[in-house]
Structure formats: C-alpha cells, structure tokens
Length: 189
Image (cartoon, rainbow, N blue to C red; front, side):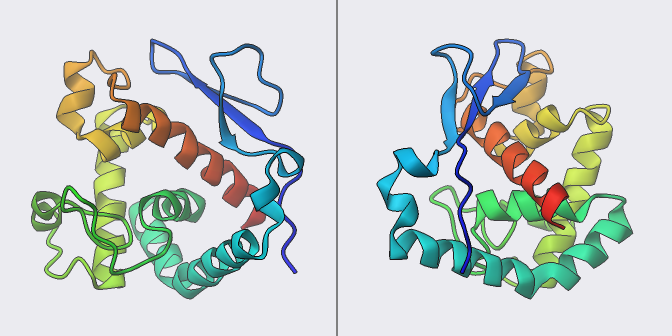
C-alpha cells in the first residue's frame, strides 16, 4: 500500500518570479501545494489512494522512454516525470482546453516545431517535450523556474515579463507544482 506524505508542502511565488517551498508556511502568501495528510480527509480516502497508485503505475509505464529522452537531451528524468505529472497525469491521450496534447501537453505549433507528427505517441511526445524543455533551459540560462514558466505560458510571455514568471495565475501555480514533483522524484528515482 502506498503511504501518502504526512507533511504538507507550501509554495510562494515572489514578484521577481522566485519560488519558495516550505513545509512550514512563513506567512499568508504561501499556498498549499501538497496538502498535509492529517488536514486533508480525502488524502486517506480509497479514491485518493487509487489516484496515487494509478499515477505511479503510469509513471512506471513510461520510465524507459523518459530515461532515454533525458539521456539524449541532457536532462534529468525526474524533471521530465515532474512535467508529465503536472501536465497530463500520465494520460497519453490528454487534450487541454487550449489544444495541447499528449503526455507532455505539446501545443500543435510546438509539436510541429520539434518534428512530432503524432502528439499522442508517447515516444514522439516525450522526445518533443524534452527537446523543447532543453531549448528553454538554454534560452533562460539554466533558470529552471523561467524554463518551466515558458513551457507553460510560452517563451514570449516570459520575455515580455522581463525574464520573470509572467503574472498569469495558472503559470504562477504551475511552476511550484512542477518543482515540487521534481524534488520528490529526485529523491524517489
């Protein structure tokens, strides 16, 4: 049986785009990223545990593809898994309301740019997403928070914001979520 973490994780994104994570929120600007199990009755419900087991099964299913893409593009597998966890929850057929598709939720223009003919093909999707993420890291001088913000909102949104996380709520929520999964997978992988 999978045991969910007992301590909560809180995130705060400052105006300059820096992200702070804590298990003890310093003030009311912090928002819950991962709920404290004792404060979240749903965390112990069979449905929540089923979702965790399902996500772990999905992760295991794509480990080899992720590892190959990570090695090929000089990225950590933990980072690719983190993006997939937040983007699609390991659903290769996922489609967002904005038209992004597949495991790494590639927009059609991004898929074309990176030679992805079928965004629902896990190998093509992960390869395209890994190449895009590698290029974003180069573009933003290895600043992971900015690269993730650009992955979510587009590189032009980050540039227009003065190379800071854009003031888009979805993006400001997205970056700490991915970073939280990334840190978890760095320990677990």
